[in-house]
Length: 87
View 1 (tube, rainbow, N blue to C red):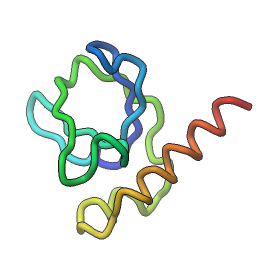
View 2: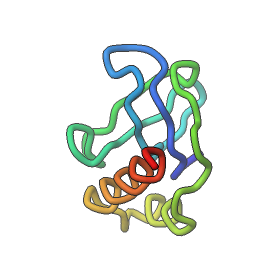
View 3: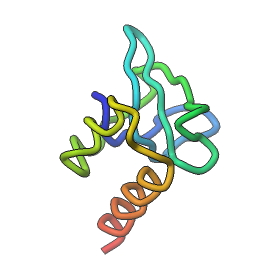
View 4: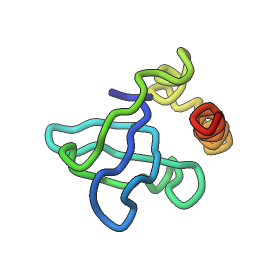
């Protein structure tokens, strides 16, 4: 799941779009590059998210796993996604 886009289905952040950076048994860790950075991801129950797109950039999951991704890249990917959905 790492690198996939996800939308929050529940909570105060309902409908917010994030990128999954880590997966555990019951939880995923989400970032948006602004309020939820790579250093401080949001932990969310898997049943409270909806996967909305597999891999926005093919190399993004590998960059996240190796630690080469940064918050600017996360913001760029999310901005591109938002631009593509508003057309």
